[in-house]
Length: 326
Ligand code: PBG
Ligand code: ZN
Image 1 (cartoon, helix red, strand yellow):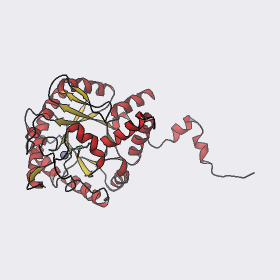
Image 2 (spheres, helix red, strand yellow; image 1 turned 120 degrees about the horizontal axis):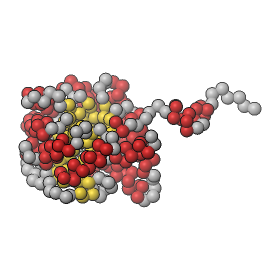
Image 3 (tube, rainbow, N blue to C red; image 1 turned 45 degrees about the horizontal axis):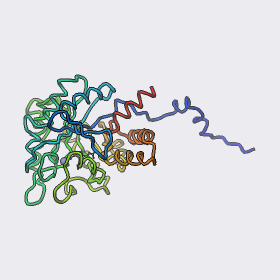
Image 4 (cartoon, protein in one colour; image 1 turned 45 degrees about the vertical axis):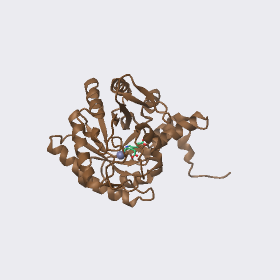
């Protein structure tokens, strides 16, 4: 008979021993749920490529966040879809802008939910770019001034954390300084530090009606071929005052998550984006994948790669699954 000293299968024999050997466990505390807010009342429009996700008016949003909080999910990230867009995205920093109204309403209706606001101009600009456009190109320095204004106005409305997603140079420093100057030194910054120019944002752009009207975002978002550059972006954002750094998208960039985790000692977040969610749901609809199992595998993999936090449209489904398995 053949004699084997090492038999790794001994530690996989039963669910009990597999539980003991498990290196990575997903927790509800790791999850952040993205939500889309629109003007109006009684609006709950499903976003076609993202089943179970809606454009919500503020009254519906408050119901939704109560459900989210009841599931134990600690945080939401809000995306505003304004009625009026203009060249400078002025509703992004309007006192009564859609996001400001949404934050106030959430803060009035639930107490223990962390509210993160996505800070960018693309949802608010008529041209759909993430910054100020002059002569057909996106201007960096005028943009960061507007982003700082937007961040302060979100903080005034009650946001706990600001998440700049624009990829302009120097925006974290500009936002940090503006927040501190206005007395919001306790409001944290989660920077979209390594945000790639990705085709996985397709469903989001439809949901937020924020597709660039000309050109693309490659002069500010990162080239998918680059990882060393991501480390430089992260180093800069940390130096400028980011409390948490984010990688986006997640799945095609798990190596980047891992490298950041090993090179820096800061909390790392990963955004499991709209296209990643849509792929799973579409395949499930065709009967080609089991979405719940695939979801678990994906979220566990993102954690295994080194993410402390996961922004994901699966947050509610994952919270329910975790609760069932308790
Ligand atoms: C806005 C923004 C985008 C996403 C988050 N913030 C879209 C983009 O940059 O084009 C993508 C989120 C997703 O796809 O789920 N800058
Ligand atoms: Zn943007």
